[in-house]
Length: 244
Image (tube, rainbow, N blue to C red; front, side):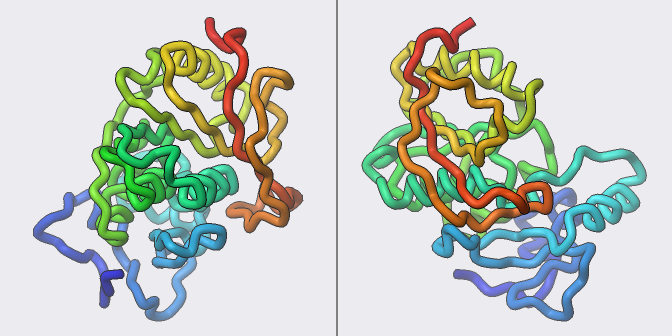
């Protein structure tokens, strides 16, 4: 684990976006700052350290003020429960990804991608539509000593190309997202990819089409809206009916 005395760190190798992202971040932490990031081990996956928000709403407000324009919510600054469960499962079952080409879809912080790399994946690509997420993924991968390729693109219109394993934590976040993700998952499954999802039971996983591989009780959850959830599951598709 590298140590950072302050931010921005590694100025020569990181973009202006990353430097803005990491401003006031440090490891070990200096004084707590609610609108800043701090590096911390992930509760369910202490093998991975991430730059996470003290308060994601205050961080969002600061980033928008600095950018001078509205920005997407910083979902990348929270360790979401589905991602934590999926990363834990991958590390506990490394044969799923070892030696294989892996895509982490809607990667956010890059937690699942980093876990796949640690588990021995031959190649890991993290995809997200938010440029700030890409900056966070690159920073977090660097902090954990892993090589992660990144793509700023919505890939749900395809079938995952030639990736052998597709991982997606908290990808069934709401009805609109599920409507995009479920057909993609079906297409990827039909071409032979291994597909694993992390889901804390938000209600958008269709019964009979996804099989539960494991459920983690008393999962440490990463956002106030998940405060009433005490378990999260790892799922895999079982039915071609997912395909559109």
